[in-house]
Image (tube, rainbow, N blue to C red; front, side):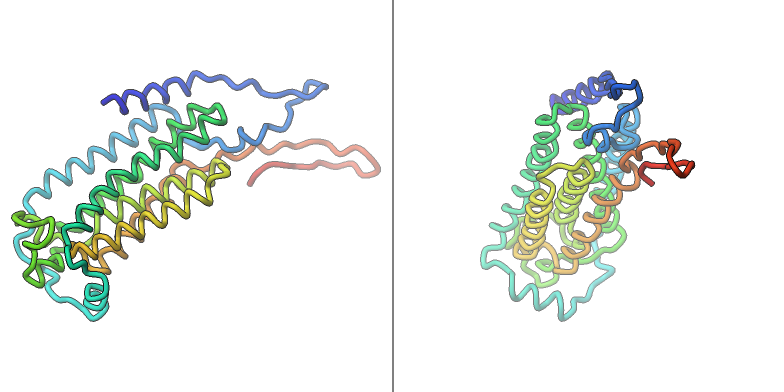
Length: 282
């Protein structure tokens, strides 16, 4: 609740910031500074809060509906690709990577918040910090909702269930964990957080963007590998989770919050040739 209140306060404060338009000596509007070219569309408080509310409501609804987990498999066969990965990466103590994957997913949101807020605060743009967090949170919520829906619609046994060793994993004693392997929600969530953070960093022009993309990719890859080592997911589960999470993380900022385009400025050309020139972003 405290973090939600902080985010709301930052969003509301950001709407009250007034930026004076720079002027040249002759009174004409000057070229906006580079910071202004990093503004995104649809970042007002009402829109962002509505976006987060819808995302949260969808996740909550699906989570409630998915309490009745499948009690049988619809996709009941394995394949050579998944079997080979399981043999290569299965841990001798599957519980350890299972716990590690849970801890990693719990740690990534804090890293995401730091990566999005630090450059915004250093630039004096508290409003950008709040906007960044809201957009990344919405993207992650959508990615998680998609994964939960898939688990219910495509009842695939976890590899440990398939091989009769579920009692050796962190899913021991939980019958609801038997047939919800496809696809990896952990992997989808981390890749959604990582890709949305990197996308926003590039859109805002942060110098840290390449490093955010690299670290985010490593965290996502590590999460998927840990889930395979924990015998909780097949390799294809992790791959689909990575693709879906990345797709949502990139698509939401780019499509719902594209960078604002500079207005087209038409000015007369005075000289040997009379005409008009147009400049701006298209």
